[in-house]
Length: 122
Image (tube, rainbow, N blue to C red; front, side, top):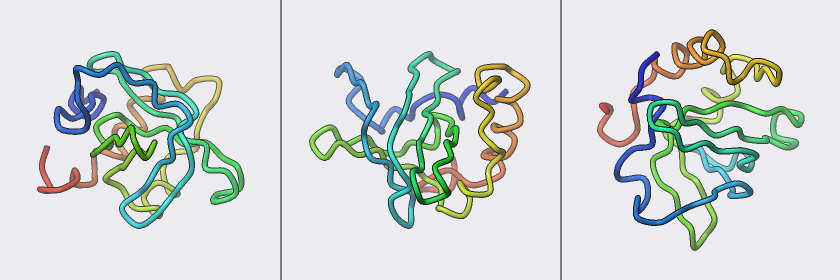
């Protein structure tokens, strides 16, 4: 598993603030995709679960924390470095196994194929 993909970027938010981003709106590079249903903050193992609502028929998606480019507490928004299409084509969310290493490796392999936000590197 790629630890950098599963860790929040240092410039995504003020690390001195304690944040609970559940309920925040999530913005892909090309528009809103849903809201944060769950978020974790363990170094090297962090992710957000996004409830996409009607956008992709009420499904949830798992996004590694490394895809988060910015968290805006005032606007209650999380910005991610993926397009709607990339997120839509991600491995199907597995409610029963999303915390398991095998599933997380599959998701990490998928998202790891795309350049990271901004500079194209991490």
